[in-house]
Structure formats: C-alpha cells, structure tokens
Image (cartoon, rainbow, N blue to C red):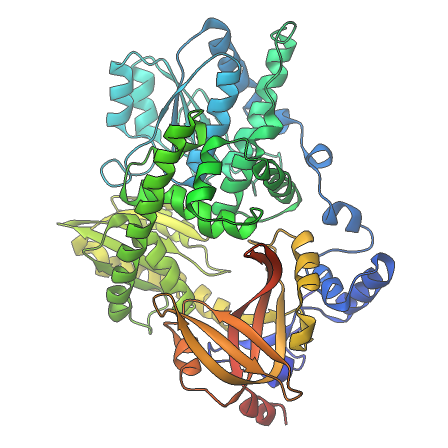
Length: 597
C-alpha cells in the first residue's frame, strides 16, 4: 500500500538531512482502509493509518490485531525432517542417553539452548550445553569441537541455530559414530550430512516458517517432542512439561535476532512478554533487575536492554554465560551471572565506541559497500558494521584484524542481499569462510585479500545498492501536532504491536517546530530536544546516536524551524506511564516550503 514516488512528498521534504524523501506510507486504497478501520474499530486516525500501512484490513483485522499461538501454530510435522529428528530425540530420552546441545553464541542460540534444555530436563534427560567461543572457535560446529565431543564419549549432538551447512564438522562427527541433529533457520546452499536437519529455510521445506528465529523453530520442535512422548505414554503418571512458560525465551530470541514480525512471531512475542512479566525464569528476572527495568518488560527492553546483555558474554567474555543464565534454577547463581553480563555489556559499549570512531575515519563513503578493517575486538565488529550502515545508508563490513587474518561482520540495507554475496565470495576463494542471510553475514578473510573483497563486492552489489538507495524513502504514517502524541496514543500503538523487522515502528511527522534547546545526555552522543510549535505547544524529544548528520545539524539549529519525523513508543518513568518520542529524521522547514512551491 505504499504511495508511489510521484505523490507529493510529506511536508515538501524531498531531501532530509539524511538525504531521504519523506513519502506517504498509504496510497489511496490504504487511505480508504484506514478510514474503514477507524470507523469499524473505533480507532484514532493515527492508529488506523499505522495499521492500514502494515497490511491490516477489515478482513484480517481480528487475526492481525490479536494473533494467538493456538490459532497460528502449525503442525510441527510440516517441517521437513521434524518427525525423524523428534523420533531420534525421543529414543534418547527413553534410553537415558546423554545429549549435548551445541548452540550458537548469540541471543538466538542461547534462548534456543534454554528452550530445548528446559524441555529435555522436564522429561528427565538433563542435557549438557556447549557454546563455542566466538574468538577462538568461531561460528557453528568445527571439526575440532566434534572430535572433542567424541573423545568425551558423546553419541548424540543437537546443533541449535547453526550446523545446517557445517559439512566437514558433521562428516567428522559421523566418522566418530555420533548422530548430529540440527535445529536451525539460516539459509544454506548445501546441507550438511546430519542425521536430521529441521530448518524452514532449507530448499525442500514447505512449512512456511522461514521467518522464525531458531528459537521459534526449536519451540515448534519441542511441541512435537512432547506430542511424541505423549504418544509413547510418558505422561500417564507424570505431568507434561509446561511449554508455554518457555515463551519468555522465545520472545527474547525472536526480537533480538531481528526476524520479521509476522503473525506467528508476534504471537510468540506477545505471549512471551506475559510469561516474562511473571518472572518465572530466574535468570531473566535477575537480568531485568541488574538492568534496572522499572516497569513491565516490553519489546524495546528485549531488543535494547536484555538482548545486548545476553550477547555481551559471547562478544567479549564467556560465550556460555547467556545459556547458563537462562537455564539456572539457583537464584544466587542467576544474580552472579546477571551481574557479570551487565559489567561485560558496559565494557562492550566502550570497545564499540572506540572502534566506531576509528572505523568511521577509515570509511570511504564513495564505495557502494563500506569495508573497514582494524585491530578491533572481534566481538564488536557486528555492532560497528550496523552503526556504519545506519550512518551511510549502505551495506557495511567491519573486520577485526589479528595478524594476517581478519574476522568480519556485514550488515545490509533493504534490497541488498549481502549474505548471498558473502557466500559467493567464499565459493570463489576470496574468503577462508563466510555465510549469512540477506541482512547480516559473517566472514573470515586473509588480510591481504581485503582490497580484493572490496572490489568484488563493488562489482557484485554496486547496482543493487544504487537501486536500493534510489528507492529509499522515509515512509510517514501520519502528520500530527505535538499534543496528539500523548500517553493514550502511545499505549494504543504499543498494544497494536510489537513493532520491528518487517513491521516498522509507527512514524509520525511533526510540522514546523522551533528548536529551543539540544541538551547532551549521558556520554553526549544523545540529545534531549526542547521544541515549540507556532501555537506555543512545547514537547520534548530524544535523539539517540547523533554522531552523524542529524547531530551535526541539531547542534547548529537552535532557534530554527524544523520538520521532524519521530517514532512514538510507550514507556514507564518512575512508575508513571508516558509517551516516549524519539527522533528519526529532520528537515529544514524553510527549504521544504521552497521545494514544495
């Protein structure tokens, strides 16, 4: 329902400070749908426009506004290989066979490990969790890791959020007599020779669950496992595991892995937040306490407060901390691990800020893909790449050099498949290894080949980057006065969420506000803006990560009139609910008037 580029720009903004045109999200059909939604459901104009802009119609509104797991949960058997994997896992549970869970070191991996481990523990299996070290072992199973597990007598490994394409490591496991089961979601070109691979993004899977994070796939598989154990009579005298209580971990992994918030994923998050507010997971409760979350946990906390702390262990500390936190039943141990992760997160932020300053100085803004390398901590290069992507509006790769080899992470923009390019570069011999999906990828490269990689990506992605940037526009949901962005609106929008990947946060344009103040907050990278309308309405807006062009403009714009594009969120401050308005983009009001004339 996006409006065509020929439509007049919102508030006359043809080129904002970040170089984007402001376009109306709704076309004429979308406008009619918004009016109908407002009338049928008693919604405000802004809320109705936001919903219509995300594909909600009169026909699907009931399902889209209140997605439920009961209605949306598929039959697990539709996942290719699911029945075979579950049968092997159920046999292991029945025989008391030791099980090793080998999980990725990020939030999706940690939460996947927690969901599977808690289910197996409830079934009496008690698995061991193994998380590889990001710096010394890298992503996924390795030959050395499989050999070590075989030496320990392991006969069954379940790879979580990894393993689909780990051909050589799983061949090594097979030679040593181990069975490897894989629960994953990453696209791969060639499947590893595992005993079973459940991955909705494998070429022959027709389940339609490709948008799920690995933890979502793991949850569906655990539903199948409990079903199989029920068929075998396991619960004739014992209680079934409460799988719904595991949705707190599913919600955390789903949001942190930035997968599209389609209906089932939103149902996972909505139900998971309810579970999280009961604080039944001792580790998550401890982490929320050290992170000083005062009110109810919401999706923003998952993505920007809890998720980064779980990730901090894998980035710069002990990769297994997150999984141990999410599976412990000891309050003292939970408090100890949560404190360590909180401290590691502070150290991670300092490392990231230092690396970003150096990387920004090295970036060539003329290249279609930003590629930078330096002696940075390998655990923060993904974050650096993400910040460079935001700053330049282009795919970015940051590489941590260690002697003659570098470990890098890539982040992309909509319309540019960086994962496919990285996999192709690896196949062509430019990389030691590499893989990923459209928006994010990882790689290992010999330092001397970095210039060749830059040239390769320029050829491979130059046209798609140019096309994506040309089509880039900021899609505005509505134009409003500052007074309309109140707590009631923010709460209603939050209830219609969650917002995230493939379901953009509500974006509202504010017309012609005078900037009265821009006060640095925290380290100075954020600004608290005081603004006033022509009618005397005053409002306060937060601007985060202002090291780029927006910050440069704001620091010089006191007394000037600006158009602002803002996100509207809901939060709690000192126990009081409130609207939280954050800046996304700005444009010079006088220039926009001239452009529109």
